[in-house]
Image (cartoon, rainbow, N blue to C red; front, top):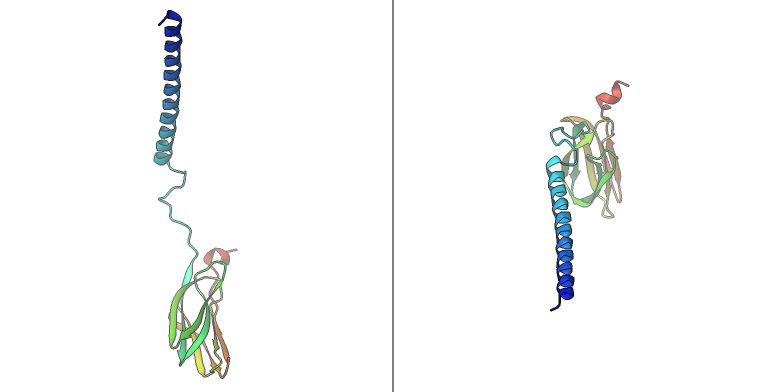
Length: 154
């Protein structure tokens, strides 16, 4: 090999070594950054509890025989209803309902009719009941919950 070829190979090796060092350094910096991010977190303090919407326990009950479509409100700040299609009677459910919302349970009997009664209790105290009769008979029970303390002070 002549001197010129040896110099060219040596320069190529040095260039390749530098490239390897640069790539290795970049990978090391990326790993260190991820480790630091994991240690420091996202800035969210896990020791402070989430703000929760105050609720009241509401018991919905539907008595009778056969089946009924039942619609009721559960814990949903948006107030969306939950629907149970062709629920076997008797049926009951206790859920948390956000304060300030109106707990409601509605029943619709099927084409076979019959008789069913809905009842609503807030924190264990009976609030309202209603009866549905006949084919596609309907009944609705509702009550009132106080507004959350933060809204009452306004």
